[in-house]
Image (cartoon, rainbow, N blue to C red; front, side):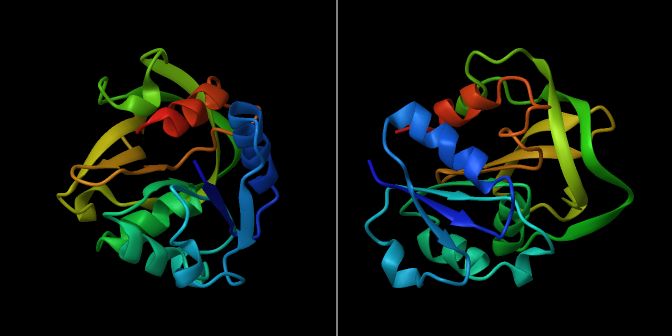
Length: 190
């Protein structure tokens, strides 16, 4: 299995890389979001879109990558990557009044059958670093909301047809319980 990590110029990217390497025994390939072409992605089985600063339209090839490989590749987006997935399918972002930066909040699983959360308690603590969210009212109908925060804000989505998932929180943060298990569950989805 070949895994690609798209680095959205974020300091957390290599935490994700180390998780993947620890789980698979192989270091995934890592490319900055503006240093790889869409045609170079064909040989990968799974794509992890990292967190990063800014908004998805500023995140290199992320939106185009999701649109091109939606039916062909397993894709997991974290924070900015999650937002790029939402926007790639026509969703809209909303700027929050309160910024979350290094804040742990409870996350509640709303889709117990979601493979990402296999073996994870119904409620767990998750590290958040964001000021934007995928707006629920503008979430395309092809997505299920897989988890929310205590206020009902979307913390995870899963596409109904494709192997595409997004997480607003950071599983690679020390503030997140079961983050390593969540990444392992994604890698094991076939």
